[in-house]
Image 1 (cartoon, helix red, strand yellow):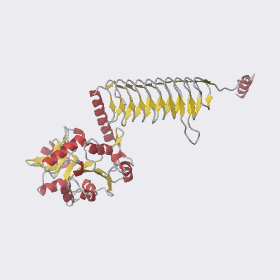
Image 2 (image 1 turned 90 degrees about the vertical axis):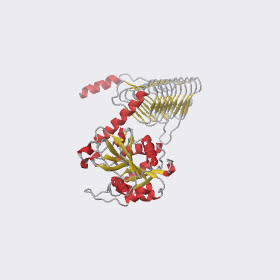
Image 3 (image 1 turned 120 degrees about the vertical axis):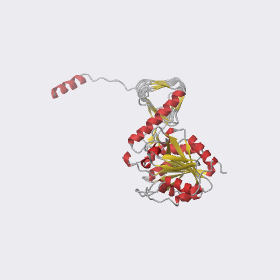
Length: 466
């Protein structure tokens, strides 16, 4: 008997759809659910189920699919879209190299297939020695879906909703469009599929009938996940997918002790991890592989992507990308944390501050209207209003170092590469072009001059022009 190891099993993912009703040049499987293409959901479910040998059948705007998957898996082209069976036929040469295993057929625009369903259906497929195992779901309202017909020895067929009798329409078990086949049996069935329908297309469902008629066993695995059948043919359907996924993530997080006062505008990616006691406020978007600790307050109106956030952190109207924010930091409102930044413990950052590719040491305070770029800032540093690290000379970027306990006065310009020593000060309005020694005060100001009567003369001229 076969086993479930990845070397024996593979997947063909059908991703050639155009999605005309989306009214876009983007292939339908590339439309996003919670910030990830639907195709990514399907591929990652396969990988999690240890089915890593995959072939993507691309079609409409094929280069978009090809560029996305890269070397992650094989691709084949369906230049003419002539049905699901025809799409699988495009992968025949690829499948011939895998005759001794099983192949999973999935739709690239049905994102909610899950790894548990893939694994359990394969186990049933092998245990029952099926030629084909259909992945199904039970629906309270099965209208529009193909119904599964069962007999004494497994599945006897699939009937489309439009062709079903009144008795068949009452069947709640529906076809998800996902299948496990013995690879060799599938290739035999593909040779016999004919486009004998009004659309002139080759339907993969016909392979089920072909295998049954040849005396092979067909059965169905009923997934406990009711959403495996969900897809999107238009923007309304795509919104429903996003709403379904969003609600599932929020429910899971609440079960883990995360608090939501209101979910308006809240979108959280499926890979995000959030600790117990953290409060998520309105308008917050959390994406990618972000990890947020316990007892934080995130929001309102934050966008956090691929960040590691510690415990007890407060983020108010913050955008942060690919950065680390340590315990007890208090940031916002209106702060931009750009990639490769590290905000250390108990830092305070106020309104209209941008940090880019920099480390900000513990208990440092950056109150407002400041840019910190390509800098290494020590602990207990105080930034006055309007400080700028001038890190770009027009050709190259250079780093700036500010040591512990320094005080950077308002409207200071630090011209990189430059270092401000420990406990050093810069006076307000100073442009620093040389290293400031430890404990020193850097002050750079021209002599102040007054020109008597200048303002009165200008005012008189303005009034005469009115």
